[in-house]
Length: 190
Image (cartoon, rainbow, N blue to C red; front, top):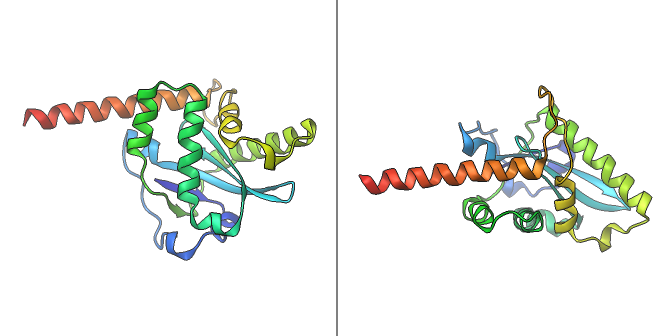
């Protein structure tokens, strides 16, 4: 899985996880599953990451990271992703598809302005939400907060209608599970 980082986030990552040459994306459903964008934001003097899937705009909010957490960002990402799916009441079979098809993150600095626009909007919503509710970022549940961020309409450049990130992720996981099932059936026939 590729996490396209802002330069600000990329500089925080250890050299061992960075890609020397930007990878080209795969084709088809797998490519949609693999591509995410991420940015680091400071909320209440704490470093937080907002990650957005390129196709579905499914959003993860990973709060209160320390320097050592950046070396284990893959673990934090996977933890929040799978648990956000669970908090979104995804069917267990789709959560299983996400868990079994999860691949270690790789990082680069390629950007998509449309996805970055979504990240910026989410960052503003998050910052305002904490200020308005007088909530502490250190006290939230990242799983529930991420789930809540995904159950809202989201505009995408070039699309007339708004999308719902949680529903779009469910569709993508369903396509991925169907593609895997078809591939397994074809393999067993040979």
